[in-house]
Length: 362
Image (cartoon, rainbow, N blue to C red; front, side):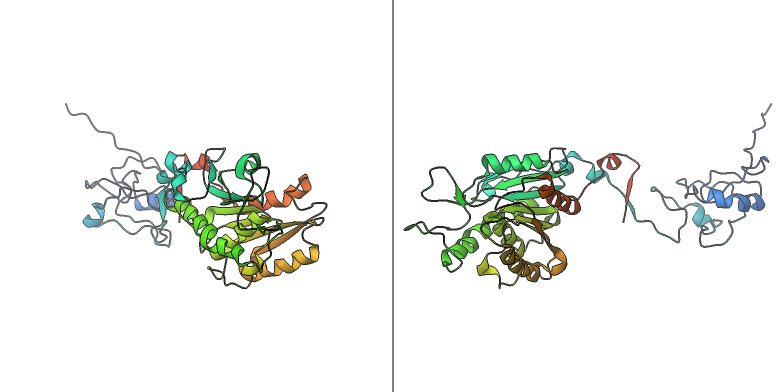
């Protein structure tokens, strides 16, 4: 004796029905009237069926509107398949892509730069939180070195999702009792006097040695390590600030930002044309009002050259009350620097990226 097969109920009126939505082939309707009544709700979840097997469907089609799917009553349309999620509204194409490539460990922890990439000595430190999204290069001042001062400074800043690279100047300072380095010749070897902008050997070393080697290092960080140029920033103090600004202006790298403490463009380069024009590199220069090497009036005059080089909208100057020719020594002095970093550094939501059902919308 044959057993009667029960028919699935219509989702609207619960009447047994063998017909269903011709698009998703999941939801059952007994009539066109019920299908039209349910469409405002059903269209949110209605996606094309992945099955190519012909099944009974209602002859009714959803109401014609900009948010309705096309009629699927023909045999050809009944056999259409889809293997990826689609928007219920086919008139509005959603460009959604899985973000699986961004969740792999290699895209979070970048490859460390190789010492052979440049003749300059450097100390690289990955981000303390395990996500190397940004990179900041640190340049020390005249007579200093990367260890311990600048490596410790980079560590203490605890910049989120940011790797750091402290670079040491190439030339030792002569006649110093303790080890110290300079980015370009700064003293007369005969009398020990400080060299000025009229001394050609200063800019000669920058153009022939310092700038090319720093460009090689950053290119290596981009091509080998996987950093993006627009996520690389520079931090420099005094003479190191001059080098950071020189590299951003004339290196042709389109970097994200520069922070220079007590340093401006070298006077010899102030009339040179920037390599990238117009520039969109963001620049912050910090100047102490007690700096004994440069008055406030001189600092403001030098600042005008930065505006000319990088564009007025991209450059800001902070005069720090009570600060001499040195690094900030108070919370109020550090605040504008850290706020600037907070604005320019990118941040990835690794929690959301770890979810399997999150898509990137472009």
